[in-house]
Structures are given as C-alpha cells and as structure tokens.
Image (cartoon, rainbow, N blue to C red; front, side, top):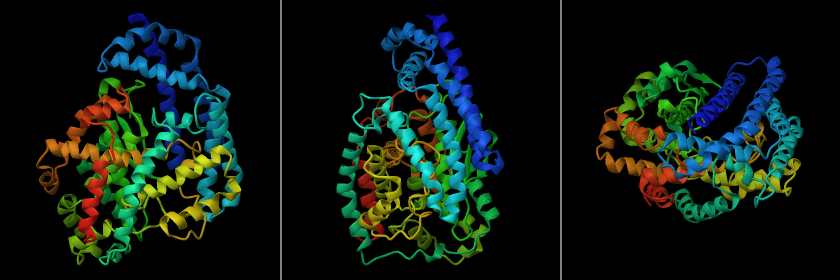
Length: 501
C-alpha cells in the first residue's frame, strides 16, 4: 500500500507542478505579456493542459487509485493521505470523461479570447469578440456532452468549482435568497434616508492608492515575503506554491474604492491559500476546497471586515493623512458612503444588497446559452432587459454590460458564478462562528489587530486545504450546514440601521 501511495503522490506531484507552471503563464498573460506573444502563449498553455490531463487520466494513475481507494474510504476524514486518494479519484472521475484534445483546444481558445477581450472591451466592440464567445459556448457544450448522465449542461462545469452543487440546487438557493433579499432592497431604495456618496469622488494618485492598499494588506496578514501585488485588467489571486501567492488589482484615479476593496477581496483569497498546511504544498489537496468557500473568505474580509466601523476606526486617520481629500470628511460620512445601496451596472462595484442580483442574472443567462435558448447575438439585448427588470438600471454600452466580466472571456461559459453567492452566504456563517469565540473582535479591529480572526480562520478552515469536502468543512467550522439565515440577519440588521427602516 505504501509503495502504491508513494507512486500516486509522485505522479500527481508532477501533474500539480505542470498546473502551477500553467498558472504562472496565466498570471504573466494578465499582467505583463506583450500583445505579440498572445498566440504562442495560448499554444503553451494548451500543451501544459494536455500533459496534465494525460497524467491524471492515464491507465497507471487509474490502477494506483483502484489499489488504494478501498483503504482510503475506511480511513478517518482527517487522514491526509486518505483524503489525497479520495480527491485524486474525484478529479480523475471527472477528467477521464473529457478527451485530452478537447482540454487542449479549450485552453488555447481561452488564451486567445482573453487577449481579444482586453482589446475589445475598452473599445466597446462586442462584434469583434462575438465569434470568439460563440466558440466558448460551443466548447462548453462539447464539454458538457462528455457527461451525459447529468441533468443540466452546466452541472459538469459546476463540479470543477463547487463539488456537489447543481443547477437545480443553485436555482433553489437563489429562489430562497431572492424571496428575502428583494423586499429588503425595495425598502432600502425607497427609504427617505438615502445616503450621499459624493465624498468618495476625487482625484487620487494611482501610486498613493497602491501604497495605501499595501499597508492594509500587510496589516490584515498578507505576507509580502510570500507574495506580490501587481496590476491587471481584472483583479485576481493565484497560488503558484505555498511560498508564492500573488494578488492583482486595478486603480482608477477618480475612484479609490475600486482599488481598495479589490485588494481587500484578493487578500481574503490569499490568506486562505497562505493558511493551508505546509505539508499539503504541491499536493492536489493543497488548495482551496471550492469556489464558494474561497469566495466566503474574500467577501468576509471585504465586507464584514473592510466595510465595518471598527476597521475604519483604525485605518481612517491613515486614510486622511494619505489623501488630503478626506481631511474634512467625517469618518461616519465616509463609512455611510462606502455602504451606500445603489443599483448599478457593474457587479464588482455592487453594494452588498444588490450584488447577488448581478450573480443571478449571469447564472440565468449562461444556463440559457448552454441550453441553446439564447444565441450570442441576442445576449446584449437579454442582458439589458434583465438589468432593467431586476435592478431598474439602463445599460447603454457593451463594456459596462455583457462584456464586463472576465469569466466568459477567459474561461468556460458556465460553472463559476454560483460561487459568489454561496460565498456571500457562507461569509456570514464563518464570521459569526469566529465572533462567538472571539468576543472582543470589534475591539481587536479598532486597535488594528486582525490576527485573532486570521488565526481562527487558519485553524478552522484554511489549514485543511481540500482534504475535507465543502459540506464537511462548513459543518466542522460552524456546527451547522449552509443557511441563508445568518446572512440575511446580518444584511437586515446593518441596512435597517443605515437607512432607518
């Protein structure tokens, strides 16, 4: 058994190294790749995807898993070697259904469309990107065809991000959440006590924004000795090893909150990866367990911490010192402004109350695209109609409409957006569980000490990596399964106070 386990570890360590090398190429493409190198980069990433896929789906890997799986199934959930075997089986069962040639084709195409999107979006040129997006939908359908036993074409894609989640379960969750969320949004937006956020408008030097955000990142616990921060069209975090966990952001002179909350968000992702047990580095369970759990960490730090009064009790004096614009802006006015509810066009800029409505629109539209009910040529019209009906806003261009998210222009169409709402819901559960064990948490934040929360998350979530399945991890950390109740309790309490409901 030991010989087979070591052989499987060796094979999949090679696969992991190939995947991480691909992540380096992806990071480079998003941050500094010359335009002329895009085509070759697509070929390089396709080659690595093919090599990785062939290792996982090989006959030798399958035989090793078969030798070990009966032992692994009998072992404790805390046995990391057994968890490794179970995760290897789960991943192989998915990947073995997909031809290597299709994986290679998908990765090469995603590199091509991403480069095209970075050019087309600023130009508001949907016609230029439309044929490539049509190809992306075709590839997602071909991928789904590899899983004939699933109920919906998107179910297979979802398994790569949120195992065990389906279109059916997601729609049920969305329906439950919408039932409670929409009335609250209506109460807030119709309140007589609306918030003026003009105090956030100004001219903020990019360099000053980045330096201020680096101070915040370090204070929250981001270790710059194990990471770095760069600019990219769409902020993201990537793990290249346990000692190399990078984040990116973007900065707009007229709106420092874009950079600010993007950094806090990506730091949340990075703290998860930095908190994973070092013994799992290079192992297939040495990463986040799901998109939903990962997003819970970024949204927890961005919203529960970064938009709260205790956080700004500590950081606002530094904000005023760094940006003279805020010297005459009272902290309470600033705090209300960054929590203003205002239905808008952009998902990443959305307030906490309307954010999930953006997610639901995207999820519904990609379901229709994969079902063949929505042609890409009709996507802008369908997008605009949903924004008018769901958020009451008018979309006037493509770049702030259906071209705004990188997801459809750098990866599969379908399978990722549900993770954002799952993450929002879980962020409340995890924060409440941590606060119950750290009764002085607000005082800690006011004093600029975020270490107790970080340590709690490390111990109760992060260090497990992907060794536990998402449901087991949630249950272990919070003593209950996922529920919208803590999330809606938080939102209702916070925004009832802000808007005097």
